[in-house]
Length: 314
Image (cartoon, rainbow, N blue to C red; front, side, top):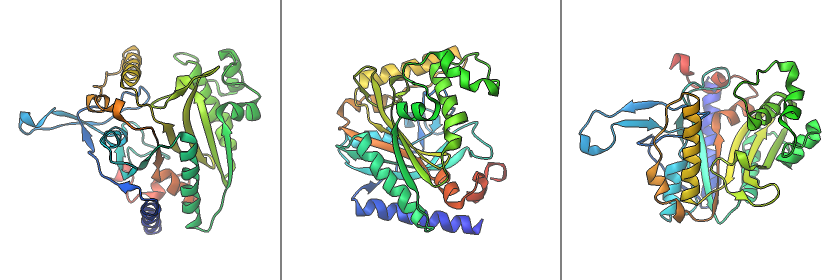
């Protein structure tokens, strides 16, 4: 445990020096919010405020990331910024997940996702250098990853063609759509084959997986986002950020429609974000899981090895 805590401290110092050199401002935003994350695949913790009613909404959501308040700061003109802090996700506990973990999230004004993914690579390389390690780098499109690894065109193949390579896993098709099968192909067949000492960056995702990213018109249209892996672990997820409030509201509402269909609670929309999103400057942002990076640095598959106390002992 002591060695892991020293490694974490060294990594934090590196991160802060990395952004100070680049004149990216460290900020701190609220952990509790009156709005939550609508993503149907992510569950949030809630708590209640017992003070004076004039203070605001009594029900509060623990953040799953600092994304929304950071974007509000960007819309207010703060410029390039980052936050290094704790986030919370309900239901995610196990060998590789902890309900409370640390996220590094940063934004670059005037950048797109391709420029930001290069900076993310440099940061991960600097972290590896703390332990005198190096990694080769492979940058590929989402489509090319599938073509090279499976001989499947993920943008045009039928659902049956996507299901076929997964037959041996005995996965029931109930409730699974096209994007679910694409995700399963990555997690079950492609990701496990990534070499330990390789940084793999995948960019230009199907438009149906846009999340909060811009969609680039074309045939087919593509989401301007990327994911970065070190070995088999996904470390970072980045976007060329959407700054269209009406479009973002529609995406949030579609999320809640999926929640209703699954029997899940609908999540209140972040009206503070939607109220300023049209003023968000052209920018790119990325979130990086610090524990995942520490696990790679420590060469362990157990998240407990890089925590002072895991959830079961907290």
